[in-house]
Figure 1 (spheres, rainbow, N blue to C red):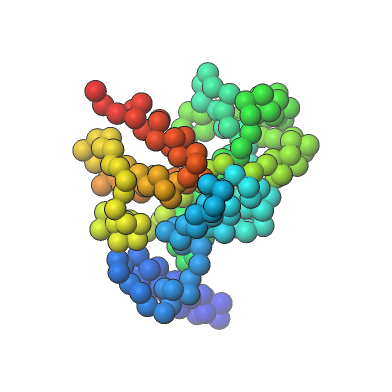
Figure 2: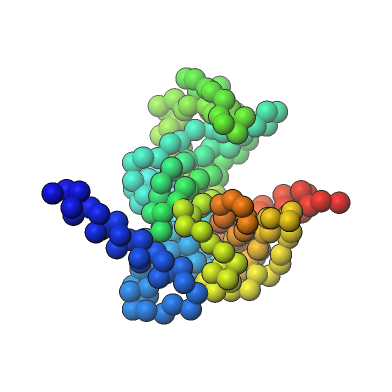
Amino acid sequence: MKKTILIPLLLAAVVIAAMLLRPGNQSHEAQQVSGLPWQIEILPDGNSKVFGLTLSRSTLGEAREHFGPDMEVAVIAQRGEAGALEAYYSSATAGVLTGKMVLVAELGKETVERMREHAGKSRITESSARKFTLGPEDLTLAFNTPVASITFIPSANLDEETALGRFGQPGERIRASEQIEHLLYPEKGLVLTLDEKGKEILQYVAPRHFARLREPLLNKMPE
């Protein structure tokens, strides 16, 4: 009985997601859905609100209440770097769209280093970074820390036509390679990375902090 009910629900979710991704779709159903990747509210103080969270203000704890308890919180550090406090969802729902999500906390280098020192254990991830598991006290601090940035990797493909239809024309384009191009939206605090052979990536910061996204891309540009 459960399977009989679940299959129609899954099919309905797929149909709605396809409708919402279709450029120019202004149906009543589409207008009623909230929390979608292109629904970005710009605030007077230079911050922005997306996925129900206000960047640089909402905490990891509030994000956990919004997206659910399956949040993995740890310090992630590349070799030779202090790292950053990150929260990861293998599957998060944005409106009716699903995808992987990473939230980076607004923490100073010294605090991150102390968390690493207090970590009960660590391991090497698939990306060759080291993942430090937080102790109980640091976990409490983590949940009270504001979210500095959000990265969303949608399960559904997001081609250029759809991206432009939903987000509009970018303020700048940066071509990283033949298959990868970054669309920059400074006024939205968004970098949308299109990958012809891989998954698209959406990165969000408060618009006043947009340089945090743009400068690394410029540094990686081929000479």
